[in-house]
Image (tube, rainbow, N blue to C red; front, side, top):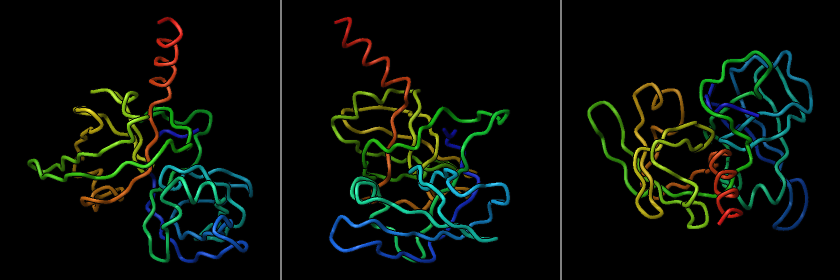
Length: 201
């Protein structure tokens, strides 16, 4: 489990195919400033919101293996050398829950439709897949590329968020432009509430 509070922006330094075929796994090495001295092989790290398992590590990098399914359903399939990635280590007992409960299981891809400066902030409008938009509510939580955000407005399949300067600087979201795809994870509580409502209807 994670909180959606990014603690480092990593950078992909190597991508290696793990086999033949379009659905082959990939080994991805990511440079980071995270302290991984106590991170065991097999530990989970959220990489742009995708929960991936550490298979190797050095003093300043770690490697993960992304399955064909992950590559197909998240932005990981487009990561290449130099790609910047939001990173968060798994939640530990006693850690502050500063964002919201995030599983690291991406529900789908959203696309940026508009970016507007508003004072010192950025107002970003995303278009979500229709199957997921029903779980997104104004003032609710959503995870975009691993970042816990509060939804400002919802209109159909579109939703907007405001990025304060701190979030722009400490995550990759400040560099988004129209047409960019992002990993989207809906709020776990919203999913369960919707499920309960379906059963009681």
